[in-house]
Length: 377
Image 1: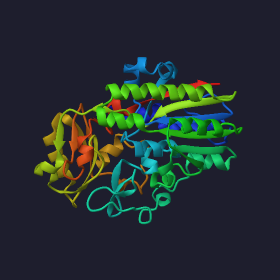
Image 2: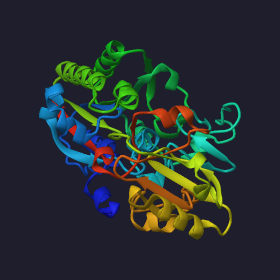
Image 3: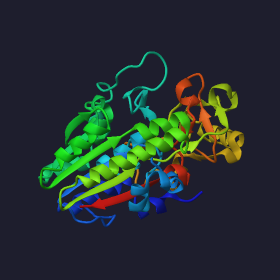
């Protein structure tokens, strides 16, 4: 498997907002992506828009396909929680510490999107026990922008206003909740009326249809065409001197074989708890059991997955070039990234997630690569 350190060095989601801020004239920010200077910038994140899927279905998104000059690496795991944190903080996963969809934080396995206990019992809001600003204490890119005098607005679904992930990764901007494509477009246009402004906007529906029907399915393709029209409409409304940057948090694969952890005693031996998702698992072991667990998972999964110990995954650069000491315990004692179309599901503990047609999280190009599309006014 390719060493991911090379991918991070070539450009990732963590470079997008710092590069945009450098173009806005914010001192101390590095323009690693060589983005053009602009007085007003919108960063539109389309959940689930993978680079390889966009290239394969360019006829459904001609505007985005024409603008997409290069791919970026989302980071590992290639999942929304981690990628939104990378984009919002300008840091890699090993630095910001949101190391997956669900990971161990203290005595809980935290589901980051809901900021609640991942499995077991009734859902419990963990924002008081696991304070988002403490789990991710580094200043976000939006906080740095606001401190430099940039007018910052975050546009997303209204129920995300005070979510744990918003507080951890997107704090620093004025939050504007929206309902659908129409008011998202209007909110972006309103935000960019202000000089020296930055607007981050998020759209989720392509990812939803990818999970339900699979990437490349007919419903997914229709939604891709609507996303393309959204981007074209925003670009057409840009004031002079503005830029639209369109990117994504991950791609997706259509799952074939499912390996059910909940029905495989050999995978459960020595395991204390499991986090992550079907294509990227954090496996937390009882004390001293990590080597045996790693060996059992490697033997059972064979060519269906890459199975690394924590130290191996960190050394291979899966979480970026640096992993903070406080972040290390959040990474599984064993880290599993699925290959091909395999998914490691949990039909008892995660019944809804286990049934999804489309999945993501691993290090394949289909999941890891996202587009960088730029439109100038």
